[in-house]
Length: 294
Ligand SMILES: NC(=O)c1ccc[n+]([C@@H]2O[C@H](COP(=O)([O-])OP(=O)(O)OC[C@H]3O[C@@H](n4cnc5c(N)ncnc54)[C@H](OP(=O)(O)O)[C@@H]3O)[C@@H](O)[C@H]2O)c1
Image 1 (cartoon, protein in one colour):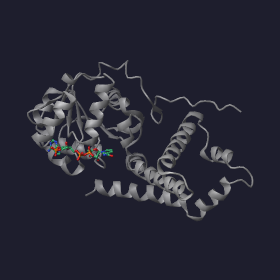
Image 2 (image 1 turned 30 degrees about the vertical axis):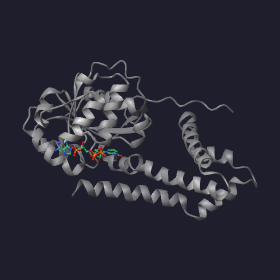
Image 3 (image 1 turned 90 degrees about the vertical axis):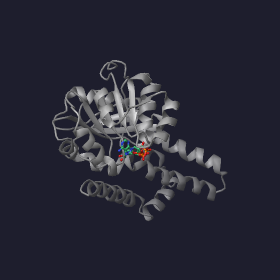
Image 4 (image 1 turned 180 degrees about the vertical axis):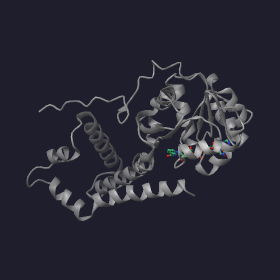
């Protein structure tokens, strides 16, 4: 039977990979506060997809030295300070570590944020906390990207704060779609999103490392084992997304009666792989929730 492809949906609860061309004018200027790994990845996405030109992007970092090197590499300009950046941009991306968030938000609170969209990728910071620190009604979008964004294969979940409108959601889509898929969620789901897709790449790398070691144990050279493991995970994920079928049904198709897969599956069950992965997500979600209350 031929699988029917699952169509991405463009509504709340759905996920989508946008063409990014229709919304080109939504953002005229973006200011990135914090140009570390994630901030830089998003800027690279905007530039590579030609969503924005370097002249439309400003950034701010704590240290001037980091700024000089990055500015040269990406062709973008550093603002004088965070207040200058806020004044000159209509979308402000907060990409500092959560521990620096309160200081940056306090600086922003002194600025007029009317008509601007503030998008935060800071883990655990809720839109209500951000709103309180900004001390004025502001359109806030909270988002959680993940590291496969570096190869344009990320997934970003985002939610809207009380004052954010559809225009702000579209601005978020414009920012995140060059680096992968995006999905709109309720804010109450954000800690769980952090536990699953935010932290998830680390779990998948452990699985990939283990599959590779398994290949080595049965005599494969490391570079071959790693290729086989990576393509197996990539292809299986692609098949799940494109067919829309249940993972159990796809697993059953690989598992022939009295074949070798069932022997391998029995080992996984005995090693409690399923419950271990479930518990990893539960613990990471709890931690995300606690971080927010520190
Ligand atoms: N990495 C991930 O997997 C991931 C995934 C999803 C979300 N996030 C979120 O993304 C955010 C950034 O993470 P990251 O890994 O990109 O961090 P990072 O590499 O440590 O970068 C942090 C950046 O913030 C800048 N900064 C710190 N204080 C500042 C201030 N007062 N004003 C202006 N800039 C300031 C730093 O500048 P200097 O370099 O000059 O100190 C640096 O450019 C975090 O909140 C994290 O929760 C990360």
